[in-house]
Length: 556
Image 1: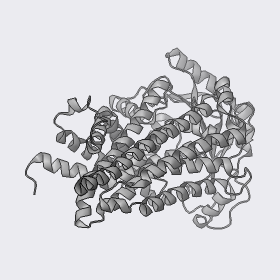
Image 2: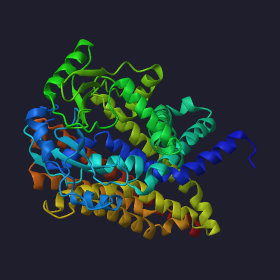
Image 3: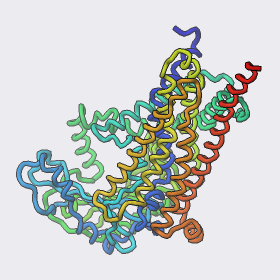
Image 4: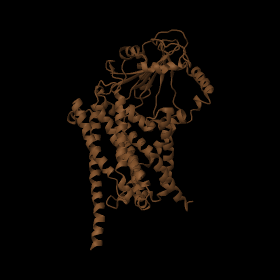
């Protein structure tokens, strides 16, 4: 079938990249945005535009907030089919209280799990969550869509297709294919070191596009490889091969019981009521122990298990912002007395490798330059895929035009939708966030509708304007959607100014970079879109003048 191994790799690289490149484009682009998901949340929810806060006092702030929490009616309705009998009016048996924050979070997320009487699965709990101001415990709007962490981040790894975790499997398959495409790409390009330094924007369009494709692929090759690999490893045990919760369910339960005996952290409630000692004192002791071992003492995760029961315990986990590895360094106390139960031992070599790979992907560390390198790596991946689409179409469209084939036209329309259409959809959800009334019921759903609606319009426009591709010409939708990106991007920044008063002069003067950074990033995208549109217009005019000049010579 193929005359050489390189030809086989070229076929693999082309068609694997084309078929699943649309998914990978979304994974790269929204992965880049997710590096600053908390900052995007601050932009999208003006009531949270305060400085990041440490974990607050449990006794003064967290405990009153936890005691106010109850599951929403929506959660209760979803639980009813899995319960024998009537649901209680109030859930009093607390299975779990937990609070989570990062060094970039000015607000605090709280979670509470409650035991459900007569549940068909006795181990299943019903959950509630809320968001508070950590300075005083004031509840904040919890029904607002956190566009960064609640939409862009899930788009990165699941495409927000939650049914049967379908999106996670699609992205996982795409990541696996991407590893094959990376290896085949290296085999194809024997002079890979030279391509690291080769970019000729003044050459013919096909040559410059291929140069840019090779350059972005080679420069960010380690980034692309390691992040595809670590993404697969993170989800492997939980989603791709969940043996512990399926085929080995009984063994999993037995392991939990053995682990509870060995660690002293009870797996089940004792059924004996007990009080709760001073949690702040436990947190202070944990921080002292971390300090004694020369570790940063920020608390990232606080968990109270089996609240109000004799088997209850409190776990204090370190934020771990001082290193790449995702470490917890948990310290556990008996809830009723505050007595130290266990301090997590140092990880094994395999465990340390897992912590490093997980931390490398999830980037919880405190290092702004490295975070920006992540953004650039993600955008480089997006550019590599986008230029791959363009090269595929440009190389084949004239041949397809001669044969009367519509293949290049279809691929080009999908490419426009995936590249410029995705950027338009992203700006569409941000514009809706600033335009929709604050008290609109199901406001977050309407923002999602704006995202998917904008993307659908971009797809319709790309297909409608793709007729020139069938004649071997460029699709004007590329240029037109670039202008639309520029207009919408500037409009989004203006809308933020009008609706909140936080214009760039104000946010830069105050040094509030979460909002200023998002505005500047959007305006930078607008500038790139304008320059791209102008260049595409020049090339379109040259293409139009070329045939006209040829016809004039023929007449003469």
